Length: 222
Ligand SMILES: C[S@@+](CC[C@H](N)C(=O)[O-])C[C@H]1O[C@@H](n2cnc3c(N)ncnc32)[C@H](O)[C@@H]1O
Image (cartoon, rainbow, N blue to C red):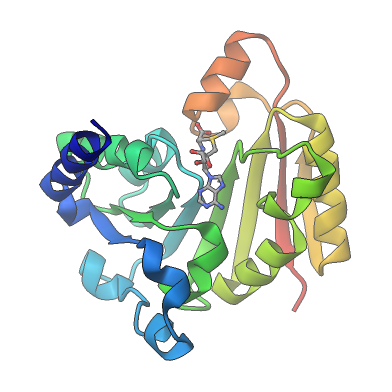
């Protein structure tokens, strides 16, 4: 049954391969650094232009990435998700909508510095990232030190991070992490108005429950 599910998933991913820039294999950790250097995706070739790059990390089923790409044809949106059975839905939706300026990367954010060119991200969007509330999992949070170090490599000089979450503890922990790791926060908001941005799948659920949305932006101090 597992084999059949995997075969079906592979077939679905093959059907929308033009939207999938890369998939991280189980063998990633066996690769040498030289082999990993060869993985870097040529975004100008993939999109056919040099438009500014917007990255979304942990894109889920791709609603934000697809809508943002549709609203901003002058941007190229690259959306990252580690789960293949989730990102396949995003690729299928992008294909059905015929969006030209969105692509997906089925990789772990931990390894992004190998997959993407450095110094090119105009915006890194962290939309409702998993809060990993257990202290022992703090380094899995996408705003922990090791990730902020990776974002510093990926961001362009005027690039910035935009974070939205429903989790106040994670939000405040993130604000501290930005400050401790050489980032300056601004537009810090404890109740983001609805009109301000494209709504993600998770955000729609939280807003329907009347929960406040916490948001901030952060810029690396060079
Ligand atoms: C809570 S969901 C939010 C999905 C979407 N951004 C939204 O707002 O509707 C978080 C997503 O991040 C993905 N994720 C968590 N850690 C990740 C990592 N290290 N690399 C890539 N994706 C990750 C999860 O698989 C999950 O799909």
